Length: 126
Image 1 (cartoon, rainbow, N blue to C red):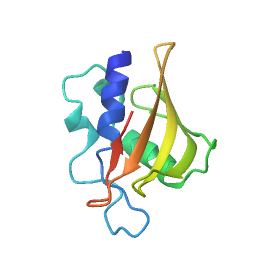
Image 2 (spheres, rainbow, N blue to C red):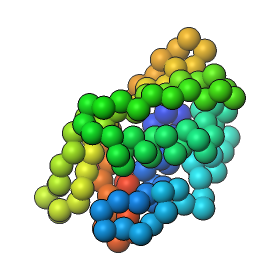
Image 3 (cartoon, rainbow, N blue to C red):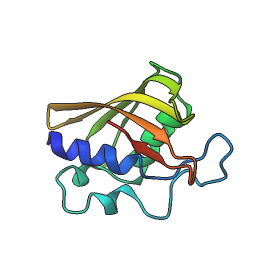
Image 4 (cartoon, helix red, strand yellow):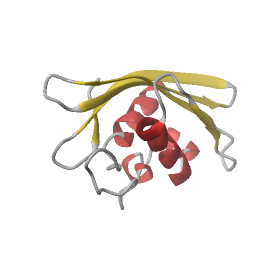
C-alpha cells in the first residue's frame, strides 16, 4: 500500500490550487481518481478527500493537522504541513506528512511540494 500512497501524493500535488497571486481553481477539472485509476488506494479516495488534502496544504498553518474520514470507504486521513518556506528559485514550498488509516493499517509518507510559478500547481519535489 505504501507505493500507492506515494502515487496518491504525486497526483495530489499536480492538481492546480488557488493561492498567492493565482486565480486558478481549487481543484482542476481532472481529478486524483483519474491519476490513480487502477491502484488499490483509489478505492479509498474520492473528490472530498482530494479537496481536504488540498485545503490542508493551502490553508493550514505549520504543524496544524487536517483530519477527516471518508464515510463511504471508512478510510481516515491526516495531512499536516510541517514547514513553509521559499526555495532558492523563489517558489513557495511546503513540507508535509500524510497518513491514511485503512482496515486497521496505517501508512504514512513525508514529502515536499512547491508551487509552480507558471500554472499555480503544486509539484511533489521529494
